[in-house]
Image (cartoon, rainbow over the protein chains, first blue to last red):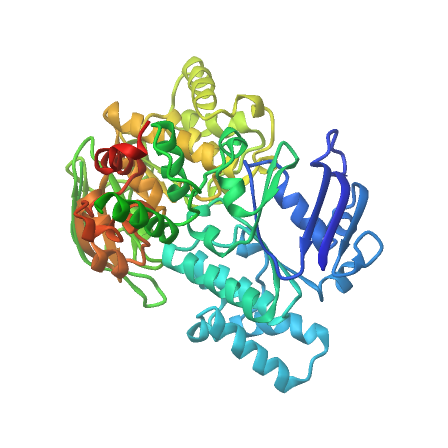
Amino acid sequence: MPIIEAKNLTYTYPGGTEPAIKNVSLTIEKGDFVILTGPSGCGKTTLCRCFNGLIPHFYAGRLEGELSVARLNVIERPIYEMARHVGLVFQNPENQLFALSVEKDVAFGLENLGLPRDQIRERVDWALQMTGIEELRERAPHELSGGQQQRVAIACVLAMQPEVMVLDEPTSFLDPLGAQKIFEVVSELNRKLGVTVILVEHRLDLASKHANHVIIMNERTIVLDDEPQEVFDSESARLIGVGIPKATKLWVMLRQNGVRLGRAPVNPEEAVQLLRGVLQRDRS
Amino acid sequence: MIEVKGVCFAYPTGVEALKEVSLEIRDGDFVAIMGSNGAGKTTLVKHFNGLLKPASGEVFVDGVSTRSVSTASLAREVGFVFQNPDHQLFCETVEEEVAYALKNFGFEEGIVKSRVTWALNLLGLTQYRQTSPFMLSGGERKRLALASVLAWDPQVVVLDEPTIGQDYEQKEKLRQFIVQLNAQGKTVVVVTHDVEFVADCGPRIVLMAEGKIVADGDAKEILTNKELTFKASIVPPQMTQIFVGLADFGLPTDVINVHEARRILLGFLKEEEKP
């Protein structure tokens, strides 16, 4: 069942002469884990802002085409209604955090939903635990490191338990293990609770193993939309200059040398498995 | 070029960010400082241009203690590109931004002009000359911050997380650029989490954890050491992960980048897989 459907979405920011996204059509199924990637300035962030109605309701400008998210027509519904269904984690956590303690920041959205007190407490505890920041509970968000702030921002969205989570380069400020942990948390929410995830990410080496769907944008529109393996191993991904996972790249490079090992892996675990098969066959 | 001797530093909040850190960076070195969030990486490099002064211990830049000179005069020698470009940019146009420090350092107008043109061209920002820095994307702002620093030609360039927010192509360009800067004799210090980026560059790595330096050596030696990478919250490069998984076939396990991986596999795979 599709949870997001866009048809010929074209959007121009107020005062802009050219559209920031052009003729974007896509279908995202409920429960998908989507990686959305592409060169800087290709329109990824703009597209994300459409999913919860920030575009067109907050940014104004001109939006044409159709967009339905969680069975709601985004163009007609107000942001506060969309916000119950779609959680957005921004690139820069400083834009998102404002309370005097981490706990209060995470509780804020829940208070706005009008949830009972003990349920708020429970969800805050759960979200802090899931993101590994329980010990920061009493700290002021603006005094935390960039990586810690990003975890707080993610906890705020997690606590709302939205159907769709949109994360715009959420791990930019995190160290690799921190990033991996966030991807695992998000992946677990995706698998266990069926939350649909849209992750904007350049660090495909770490993220790609969790995804079942990859969308690549270039020059303000979608150019590739398929399973990870198909997308990463395609000629066009290389031409656009998307940083395909190193494991996939190894296959592509070997193929250039005339070594054909079949279907390319999208992560190191798969590569090990495939190479072990080849080496074992060679041995016998 | 930079000598850090037994430096301790604590923030007013009481957090001990550096605990007796000693380090020597020679002229022309290429060093990546890696480690988990909060390990003290940024605190350490802020000592290199006197932004922070040690609570105890001493930092020497080109033989001069950072205690005895102003941050402004150190900046001429040690250029600093911050993690968040918004902490660095403030002018009305991209052009003015790059010219600002040059004027402050007292360069002649003609030189200011030609340096601005040179730096913007180098970082692919020429088309934004008259644009406000705040209209640029995150990746572009980052490159602008780098352009402003390179314009005054410091001997040491410190980059705090240069690859954040950069897409693959920009990152690749940046990598070639940094390697080239270093090849031209500049001392380059990069604070980064980006393991694949480091694996492709192959610099000396200084690994930090909890305010201390826990390892200092070449990229290969450190990135393939499982205990060390874990200690510093680093995920080993994908090629290392692959070759560790193939160790029982007699393949080397100290592989960090895709080019050596290809070379090794081409030598190892039987003829039938080849044309």
